[in-house]
Length: 240
Image (cartoon, rainbow, N blue to C red; front, side):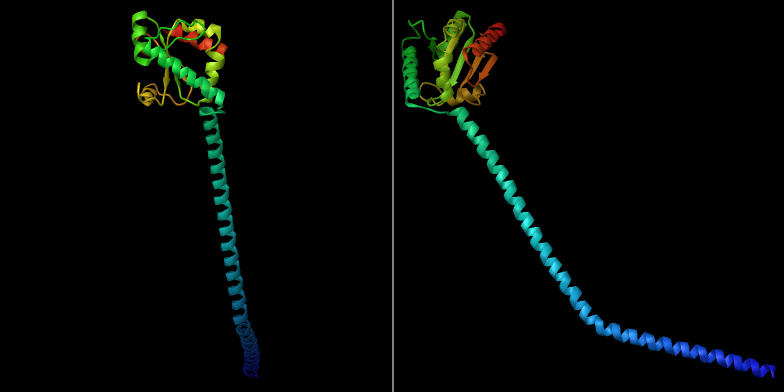
């Protein structure tokens, strides 16, 4: 009797386990069938969503890249325009007929100085000499040299002639120098560009002061009024 009871208990447990296994298999199969039905649709949706996101990202990157290129190009062009305008204003400035006439008169005066050996009787202007003549006078008179580099149409060169070189104090101080005026574009009487390169002229007007030995002792780049120019002349004399 005891053995029979144990067998019945075992058979009852076995039947319960079988029922549970059948229920799990049935439930698992239903879930699997349901997942298989839903799987193709979800894959299509995911694939379409990925493709859409990829297209949107590509369009956004292309738009952003285009905006960056436009911005950088604008900055470069703006910088070039500003620098170019400043350079043109510094070199050429606002020329006028009166300025050109004054420059032509100054050139005629310089040519006359070269022909007459630099003999100027007008004490109201600076005595300008040619390059070779000025260097010889510097050695013979033991005076430092003041070289003014200019070109026709240079606005600030004309302003320097009108306002600074016409000042009586500058004229008087210039007597301590041998003054030379050189057109950087002259090719007949002398090599203007060659001399500009020799003395490292970056723009006009440029005034280079040399001692008797021909060494540079001071330099003025650009326009200066009479007071500033007098200070630079004094500094050149002290270093000479």
